[in-house]
Length: 115
Length: 116
Image 1 (tube, chains in turn blue, cyan):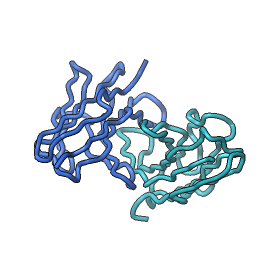
Image 2 (spheres, one colour):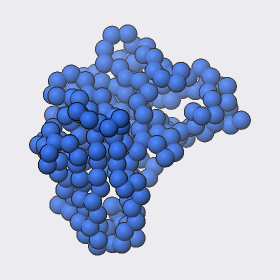
Image 3 (cartoon, chains in turn orange, red):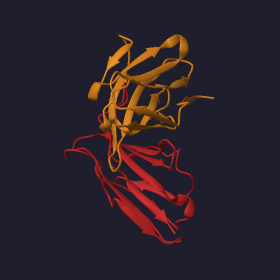
Image 4 (tube, one colour):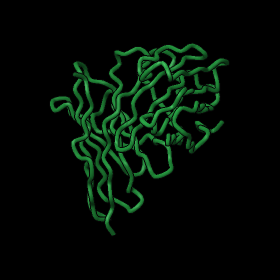
């Protein structure tokens, strides 16, 4: 079945440490890929997206993500986490097949930042 | 407007009551989407519109849920005879997607519905 998996429900990281959030997808063809962040009381904000080309994409707030076709993964990274990065992060895919190109989201990873 | 605006931000209602949730998309955006997000889960697609036409309502859970966008701008999601299981965050998104290529959604802050 087509799906998006974020294996880590919670991640705790110290401020200044690096962060990596995992995302795996299960689709026949490479979908369009997105990472969104949800801060308390806020809407979902787009961090970055991958459509084609360079497999390492840069986003806002110092985040980057790498698309690996062989692993069907699109992991999100940040070299040095700030306390303001505490939030919930969602990976999403657009399969390019369904009419309307609606997004399918993973279950999310909640990031806690320790001082 | 500058962003996607949703109202009310919070709604508490009693089981059996009808509720209407409103979404005002970014000005000029053709496509409008409704998602539902249960606690601890990712958003799930409900329905979407191109202009005033409802193109896909495959995600609406049952016939108590309906949506409209009569003038191709503001949309209303209506839940009739609410049940406790309808409690969730309801998110609206809009985009300039016109049927081809990648679709980048801009989300509103959501309407949190609590059914007692």
